[in-house]
Length: 432
RNA sequence: GGAGAGGUGCCCGAGUGGUUUAAGGGAACAGUCUUGAAAACUGUCGUGUCAGCAAUGGUACCGCGAGUUCGAAUCUCGCCCUCUCCGCCA
Image (cartoon, rainbow, N blue to C red; front, side):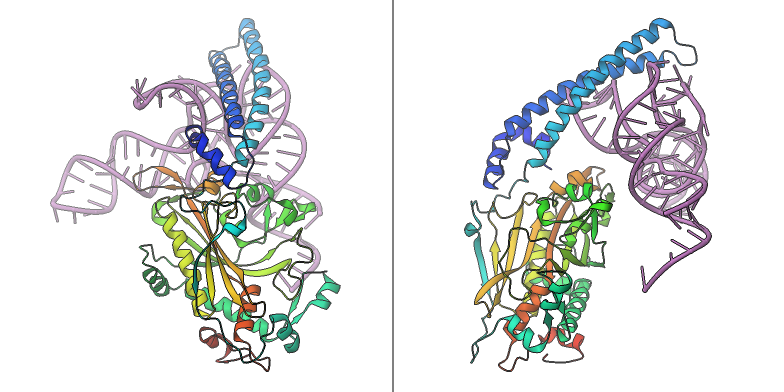
């Protein structure tokens, strides 16, 4: 949620920003409700003041009949005002929640994702002296993926991952957890990127995979609900990204500034209904209802938020480089960064089997937009209480990154080269 | 699933209808003392919201939501969560 005081003083900018992000919300209507609500609030406060005066004048003694009659009259009027106030507040809050976060000034303005900007391309695409196959063709040959039986058991967009591919997944997990929890590695990453940031390591974390409605909504990641799995009997949702359960974990908490930045690297299975994607990316495991992901999440002061975002992007690049994968960095335009985001970067790894770059990573900077509803705050050293800034970013989406490893490292006979950094976690094996 | 106990501020904790503007303790911060520190003593110390340049004032908040009452942390109802025991279980 945006700060209403900011909206009051920057109405035109906020309206323009909403339009650039593709959200149809009337700021003038919001401000009218804001005014109405405040007037009703004032009146209610006055009546409550009167009520409190009458009540406190009776301390110790029995109230007189006139005092009781007066109290009743106040009560009567107050209940009417409160009814109106409730309606006004609902209209106001409903509109306020629809207002998207302000995009950073360096986010390109665009109406479709085609207007995302290619920031850079890194790494040489591998050359093959045979026609490279896609990951699914190789995986079928090696018996690494079984979608037929998965569809019998769970339906489309599910898979059994088997054999060496499972070992590869756990190797990647180990590598990432070890790298991000190592201060020396973090120092290397930050200094390579020229970033002056805290070197506090990431805490590895296994979060719950289910989340309550109110916190999901406060994270502003519940919509569109069509893409979420709901457990009706328990009023719980299956999370669609570890961000959802990591970002919400410190709701209603106040940190000391010395505790920040607070960094987590979470491993979680994520669930997406992929509503409206029928027939898209049906081959292999590129787009699944269920996939495992390593996710970075952090809480910082407002002063450090942007640098934290840049650090996350640097970590993503470091990890892609470590796996020797060619990739490109995309600066997402206003319409593509997402409602709570101030800035968003995508990484796309090269997939020779598709002859395309495909999205494997995203990095999101939410400023204080999520923290406002979560009430996650920091007590600054000078005593001020401020909202924290939240960042999240993919470390690796396991399915997609294994696709990239398979397709880039493939050989004619169907074996796959193992990136050097992963070999220690695979018993020294250089190929699968 | 059954039975019971509980949820109060940064933490602990008192509080069973009207000086609760939430006692007391701890932590934190400031000061006195000290060469310095500790201890002791003194003081400060919740959040949201509205009005105001500010000082300040109003109001709301004791897990969440309804209700009873002139008046609710306190009484009633519903829900959520935590703990203990039993049952089940990886």
